[in-house]
Image 1: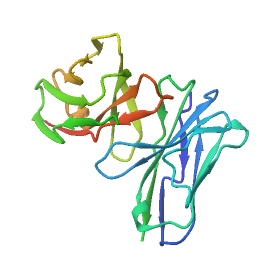
Image 2: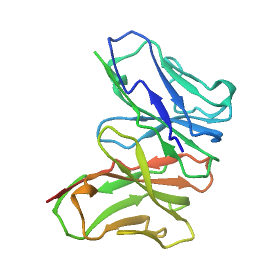
Image 3: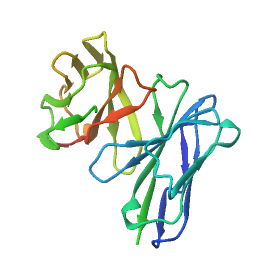
Image 4: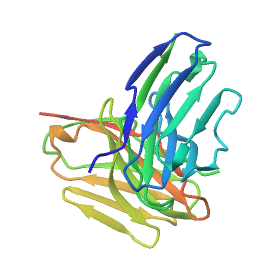
Length: 113
Length: 113
């Protein structure tokens, strides 16, 4: 069974530029999560989707971050414009239900110069 | 607000040694607690999940315990091997929330041959 797929794996951009991350969850998983992980820290939840509905986006900085999950499968997380402080690893995870085990992708490592 | 702390932040041991990683949390009203492993540049892999009604879980050389009343969990690794070198993260899920995991900052383990 294929795991959670994320792309790109690495991204280097200049500040004020836009950037987008893509996630393909495990087939059949209705719940999808985006996490932010700073160096030396544990992941922090940005947004959770149940199918195509964002049900918990309280930690998403909505002035510059946006996310979508069209058709309840793949998801895209966007930052516009990027700031230096956005340099981090962005992890996507999926599960068969919101109380079930979460399976994580390898993450996208973002560096903003 | 739930806070999760892991001590020590880093640990280096010789191969074959038994070791204990610690995790503490401030709010005992948890649904479950999970231990993850993270290898450099990769996502998180779930190791053990302990439900709030359980005291411990075992998988191979790993044993995780949970003491809700004191807000503590330990991960015991027996007969450590160089392949165990990674960052270990614990995460708690609150009993009343919507599946959100609160992570500790992790313990980075190095097992020397």
